[in-house]
Length: 409
Image (tube, rainbow, N blue to C red):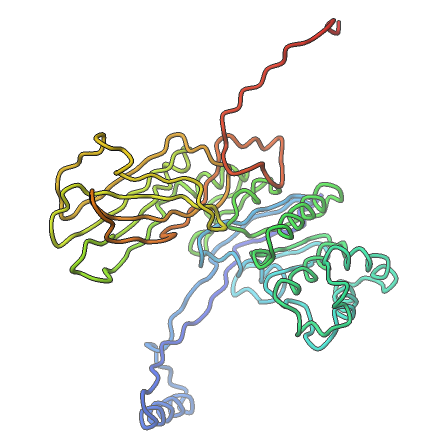
């Protein structure tokens, strides 16, 4: 059976404009006149445009029924790839062959007409997918129930909140039986309960009907739960394709999550940088380094770290003062304090870290939720997929059974 998606040497180029804008009306008129002269004389200003390749030489194939998780940092080309596959934008080079009916949910409002009601947009989207009206009618009640927008069904969607928009758009895309379902990070707009329901539906779409799903997300737990294969994009190029856990581990090991800070008050001790070692994360450990500077030596530099889940709720924390006499570093006016948790007993998910700087007596600086990082638990078992997990902490449970009564022969 031929692959449902074949991408060969795909490239997408944009031109970035660097034309200077005038600060005054006189400057603007002068710049506008020069631009008009260049256009009329067909002379281009090479300094005003920069060539940028959002995708470059990307090739891969997707088999029917596969669930692909597309990962990469912001600006890696993930959304551009989905737009090309959804036929929203044309590639500059190469080709993408799609065999099947595609439904895509790339951003709030995609595929909806704002002047039409929710009811009318359901039928409009079904018609775009090439579905007969009777088939849409059979799915109609199921779509409305899933989206939870019964009261607003005959309201123009331009009056919907972003959450309502996404709920209805996902329900339409998932229930009108496309052969290929493409979903971007837009699900992050919905609340946690709806995200969970959407992930379950995507898993059901792929598992029960053999349809193909392409899913872009920064939520490692969601990617692990529903995806079998990963595509890792970096600066517009395909770095790796393979089992989702292998791709996630390689992605997390490539570099560090870091933030650099300018001092709000140079006359006070301050945090200069916070770095999370991604190579340690890939090995199941957490290593956070906090750089600091001070206009005077800190007699006993103290750094505090609090871990939060993706909703900002604190999970655990520690600082030098809690260590008592075990923390007795030399006085320093600058340095880096590193803390490590090995192993890191958390489930796969996105986390944040807040950091504090002080000495034995007081705090001087704080950076709330200074860095965000993704963690893939090495104890995840892909043969037992699940959409969610119980709690946040991955404790080392040990189970045993003591049979009571006669054993089965």
